[in-house]
Image 1 (cartoon, rainbow, N blue to C red):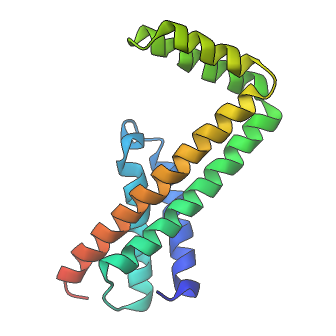
Image 2 (cartoon, rainbow, N blue to C red):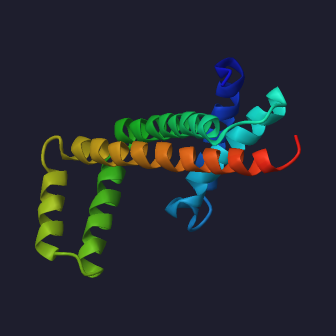
Length: 155
């Protein structure tokens, strides 16, 4: 992988994944994989050679990293400028968990942790750690699948 050529493609793939998250139900997986696939498509158009699935996975993972960085900036801005709204949104989501059959006592304990000192920061760090794994893994899979598919087609 020629990273000077791949990083701009990965950045555009990352932006595409963030935009695709706005599509209903895309946040369940397709948006992340689309970002990796777009990154591979753009990179392949730039270098005009066949890619292995491993190279596609690397470019897709870079795309997932860019998506994660964009989302981190957005969440940090929310944390700094609108912490009350962010805390209320997380509390509402936790309250809905008990309505969906989760342990009401556990949801109430989570809400108490959220309201405590450092609770909002804890929830954001936990959420962003989970999203880092999801973004990188799914984008990597999307990049590998796209590279494998493109390998079967003519350049």
